[in-house]
Image 1 (cartoon, rainbow, N blue to C red):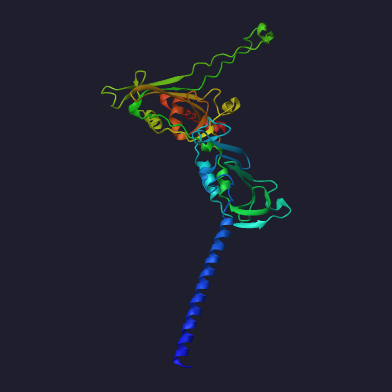
Image 2 (tube, rainbow, N blue to C red):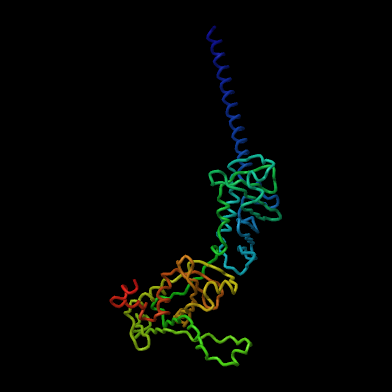
Length: 379
C-alpha cells in the first residue's frame, strides 16, 4: 500500500470516528432529554388545567384538608390573605398554609406503582389524610393511605385515578397535622416594664358562700320551691400596689401597699419581673363555649390582674383573668380583658400574681411545724 493509499485510509477512519462521536453525542442528548421528561412526569402533580401556573403556590385560591382527626378549610380574602373558612375573624398566621402549598407544588414521587384491585392493600380505602387545592377553575386532590414499612412515606392516589399509586414523603401529611390554634397570631401584650407602671391591683378568688347552720331555716324555707335569683359575685379580696415617684416619671418608683413600703419585698420584685416579661404561650380556644370556659376555670376566674400604665403619653389599663392550671401543670389558662378567647400562659410568668392573689404581699403561708411528739402520736 502506497503512502497515498495509507493517507486516504487515515482520512476515512478519522471521518468515521468523528461521525461515530457525533452519533454518541446525539444519542446522549436524546437519552438525557427522555430521562428529564420521565422525571418531570413523576416529579409531582400534573398541574391544574386552568390555573395557568400550576407550579406556583400563589396560583391557589382555596385549600381544604383532612388530617385524620379534623377537617380544615382555608380561602383567600379580598385582600389576598389566607383566612380560616370556618372562622373568618380568627387571627390566622398563614405560614402553615403557605408551607402546605409549597410542599404540594414541589411534591416528588419516590415510586410509581400500579394499583391492585384491593384498595386496602395501600390503605386508600380508609384514607389517613386528604387534601384538595383549588386554582382557577381546577382542583388538585390527593388521598393518602397508610405509611410505608419505614414509616417515612405514604401511599397516595391523585385526582381520582384509581389505577396508579404513588409513594411520597410524609412532608405534606406532617404539615397538615398542625392544629388550627397553633396557627393563631398571639396577641402582643403592652410594655409593662416598671417605668411605665402606675398601679397594680390583684384580686383573689371569690370567697366561698357561707353555709347556713343546721336548723337556721324555717318551715317556710323548706316548703318554698321557687328558684332563687342568682346573686351578684361576692367582692373579691384585693391587693393594690401604688407606684410613687418623687424624682419624675422617668425615675424608679417606690411601691406601697397602703402605707407600707414593699419595694424591697422579694415578691414585689418577682411581680415586676413577671410583668415586664409576660407573654402568651399559645392559643387554647378562640371560640370557647360556656362549658369550655367553665372547664378552664373561668366560672369564676381564680384571679384578676389589673395594671394601670402609661403608653404614648396616655394612661391605659390592662386586665388579665387567670383561670385553672393546665393539665400538664406547665401554665394557666388566661383571658385578656373582654376578649373571650382562652390562651395559655407559662407558670413562671404568673406565679407572683397567683401567690399575691391568695396570700397577699406576705407570700405563701407555710404550714406550722407539728408540735413535739405529734408525729409519734400520728404514727
